[in-house]
Length: 187
Image 1 (cartoon, rainbow, N blue to C red):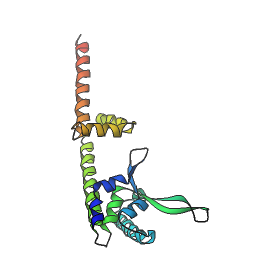
Image 2 (cartoon, rainbow, N blue to C red):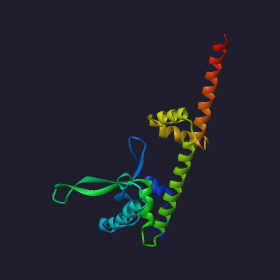
Image 3 (cartoon, helix red, strand yellow):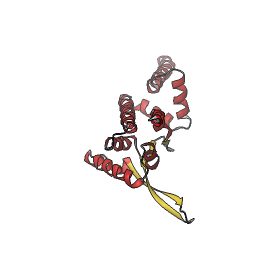
Image 4 (spheres, rainbow, N blue to C red):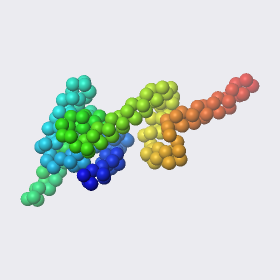
């Protein structure tokens, strides 16, 4: 039981990856170990249940469970490829939900991915309220390098909602530009 004290939200953050487009994903084989599976074959059964749940919810399985092959060197020195998946947050949530074993780490995974999914939904709702100009500005800035650092710096400075802060800055900039243009039009 002492070992379970080390499992926290940070455990799942530690194995999270971010691709070149800023998309988060988890690798199934890394998640397998965190969820205390020793054999891929056993974990694969849980993945298959989660894939079925994804299909039943009419969400694209290919978008959530990206099948990848990883090269490894076998005991005989030959290069072989093993099966793995790049998993979205939703895929990880489905895996945790379809786990039948009653382990504390599974409960932690269910909670972590449920909370993270809800946070993402809230961010998407806020994003949907932006004007088209604000969305373009936001997308352009999010695709630039250093964005993650900007977000982390904002959080450490006490900014709780970077999107709202960006919106306020955009609106102030637009108002300033409009005030510069309006006097010229009157002349």
